[in-house]
Image (cartoon, rainbow, N blue to C red; front, side):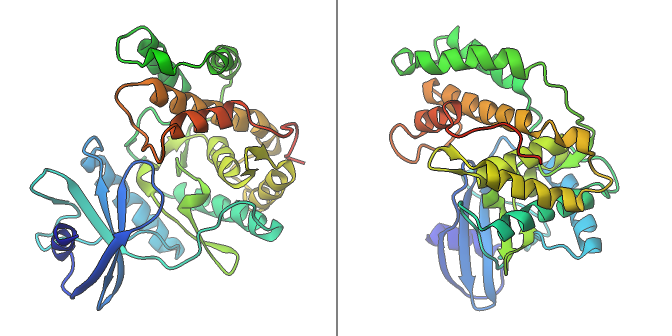
Length: 320
């Protein structure tokens, strides 16, 4: 923690009281920093991330959020006037003031689900006001063909663990890829890109802010909504269709000009596609020698893959 305090001192002037892990991120390492001047967030950014694109997008969405009066992680600058500090191990770090709010976990109350949908629609409206098109920090995000190509290439290489393969899951992959590669979506809107529940802060049951805006890019609004549903409406491996319907009603109540009813009707299929895509990514990671997702406990990645490929509960028409 002493080295972390030293990194934080590059951004802060006040005395640092403590540094402790924060959140449950799958990619970046995040810490809560308590100081005499308040609480902050310190985050290590993956070396593979394009810092130039991150900063370019930050300028765009921070201006849009400021105009709308919407809370967001407002990056601090180092003593050298930079948004990122590079340590002796060539690791990059950034900081921003902690946004106080509640992180919800499913199952959610019906009014919170409705507010969640409203908040996502409002975030989408703000993102459409960006002064220019954002740059994709994760170009292959939600690109099913690229995820499938990585999976196929892995199976035909020496970089996978043969003993970890699962015949039932690979059968699901063969079936699903034929269906979901036919799905054509409008990808001309600006989206959050990772609109999961863990990235949403609530206050008094209302959405206060969206976190982790590194994934802001041009993409599909429906995939953003579907990902929000995935993270909000699955409890113990079972999909809650009534919960999803409530979230969609909230979104539709604020989505005028963003999306039409015909497009919303595609949500059940897009939801299944999002679950398939994430299941494919977790399964690929589970058999690969080189990992992307963090392994929270032995077998975590494979367990996550099974959960998405063998999701319980009816998925029919939750648009209403």
